Length: 114
Length: 116
Image (cartoon, rainbow over all chains, first blue to last red; front, side, top):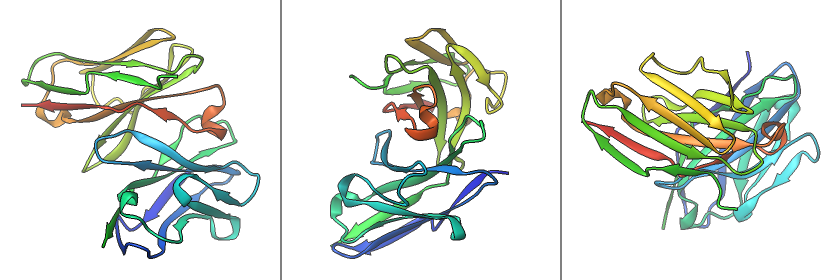
């Protein structure tokens, strides 16, 4: 079965530190992978996506993610955290095999402290 | 483009009352999705439509929940009768044909439902 797992429901970093949010997927067909961000009291906003082109994907707000097929991972990183990055982040996957739904991970809440 | 528009933003109702949530998708998007978000269960897909036709409603929790899409620019999610455990944030999202494969979804701002 297709699934996505986010390791760590809560991550806390200092302002200026590296942000690393982990996402692993399971799939028997090539996946499309997404990261969404949700700020308090708002809907989900697309941060970046992987659609079988470059394996290193750059998104908005300085975030990027690397697709590693051998590790079935799509971890989200940002070199230097900013206070405004505090939010909940969701990894999601869909598949080229015709299964027409995005499957979301449980989410990771990122806290950034001074 | 105004994005996906949901109304109301907040709804407080008494147990047993009927609740109707509304969604206007982005013009030209032919897929529409209803999600529910709670602390305990995270994001759950309730139902989705393609060209106004319900495709998968396996996520609808009970017969108390129903969803319609009478035309390409409007959808409703109705709960009748409502119960306290229905309290959650309900999101509507839309996408273009194949958009969920390459472009993902565009989400509305959600409706926060509180049933007391």
